[in-house]
Image (cartoon, rainbow, N blue to C red; front, side, top):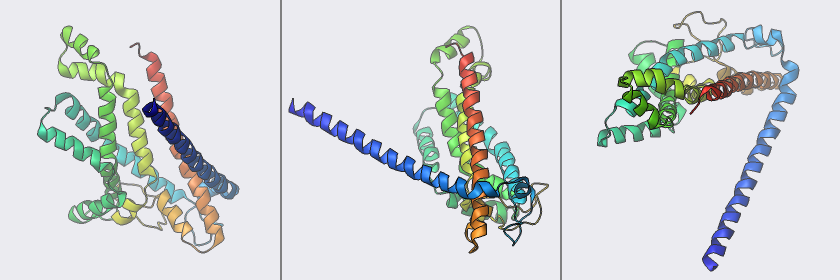
Length: 285
């Protein structure tokens, strides 16, 4: 009886501490968002979105940074998604379960927690210098691809694991090959969760500034990029530049830029949630 009472006290204490911690975190987040929206919404306009950077805060806009971010996300998705999904399929469906595969899985999981600035240093040395890609969009997108690859691989493997083995066995019993089973049955069934992991990974990449700064992204670019070899800026870097300025008007611009970045991120996550819900409604198992 004494042991059970002590256990209940510990459980209750943990619940109270957890609730207080979450409440404080949410309160701080709400305060931060309210202050950002209060400061930035009056600055939002079509001119702000379509204007070029300027040393005058009332004329400065996010057009070049926004176009650089769009280019980065498209190229990063092109590089990271096929490699990440195919790597996860191989590790989960084809790879042999031995000591080497176990070590590989652990290292992939650990790479998800590596600070992003380390990926920036790797991208600078490997892509910008060794491959002579310079301060180009290609360097930035390849660097971000390395950053999100572990996240895509881990989330895709978890999505594949969630599919019941009975579906695989039924497919094999009907004479389907392993690849036919994966391509026609397993991947469609896991598509919702795979897409969610991909969107979460891209949402992380869209807000990263440290690896891009290290890899050679520019703070000021007077033109929008038109090809992968162009120099570029990005929304997080533009926001960082404005925050570092002493004028209060640039802080207002930074708040407006943060709102734009938040809206894009929320739209990506909302699309993933809606698509996953739609796919789950179609699944009968």
